[in-house]
Image (cartoon, rainbow, N blue to C red; front, side, top):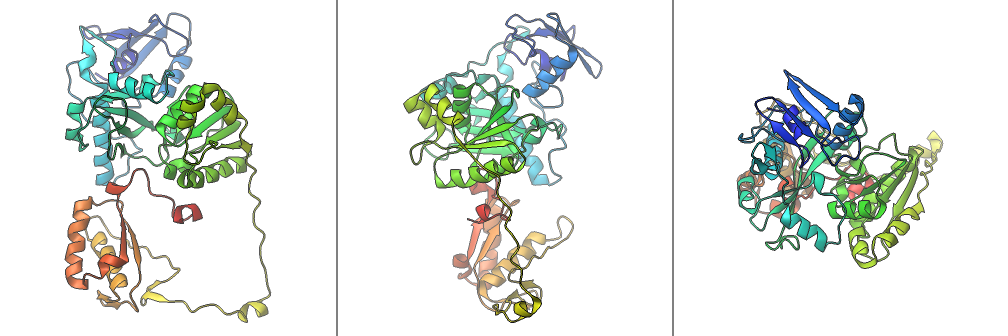
Length: 459
């Protein structure tokens, strides 16, 4: 059962009657502590009725904002193992992207967990270690409704290093929160915790699974005229605690400028981390917001290296709230003017000659695209080209003019597969390619690849 069951059990106080295919839960459209919403499954339809008087439109809209309406994957039936459902349209056709999304889907289901369904009703996930971890970070706001705990014993089956349990946050497409997409769930952000739950695991504690570009973890309902955007998950929780207003975690510095900005907000305050990566990521977002005609502010903690969670722990909620709300307004950039000269002056200028990296078709300052059907060997060809350029040798009849350094940004191969291919090419091109080819692979990346078409992404 999906649909009505998901709705009925979204809240810890929800109940579900399997034989009657109906249930009761707390209504998300008003402050409801005593379940007043009836939910029933009729064929493919989910029927909801609020006995406190909320309209069906308001109830469905509130559920969509929380991401628990049937179009977004949430929970699963009693006594049933999590089973992959059809992949939403947000997932690309690429098989590896699909595999990563399905892994994220399974982690989400495992963290939400059938073990909390007992005696015909759901019981609250205790989230003991997550609560301990957040409390130790100074976070006391109610942010646990959409944060889950993955038991330590389940980490290994998802390729995660064993430690204590893990904090799991479902990621949502920012475009869906802006109303321009129906694709809600995009993946999970996983934070492995120490065994005592008081801190993160010692090594490599954070991982994202799924499709992270443009995704966020939202806190608080999307209401009012102001939106706060922070980089990290705990930073966003801290900003939400300090302000009480809608706050999004962009999850990584590289994702900050990839998120969509909703039309309902008149002001966006970008709450940056005070380090090089954080500032480089936050300022372009603030400038983009300003260019949209909205008020944009850039809130930066006082001390170098601090984020707003560190500031919250050292100075408290009120200090953070005042500092963030009084942050500097960022003005929209003025377009640069043209620098025009006459044709006669132009032809008299001296420019360096254009160099061919792999004659006759791969020039420096050029763009080349390779097209082919899946499985015909595009990756082999591209890696061979990289090795030819790095070694100054020949490949498929093309000979590089001289050795040059290469940045190889991989987005599909498992790291072990890429290693195997490079070893084979080293046997042909020589060990010198090992010092001239620089590798970036998703298996070593925490977050998304930066936008290499921008100066910030190239920095």
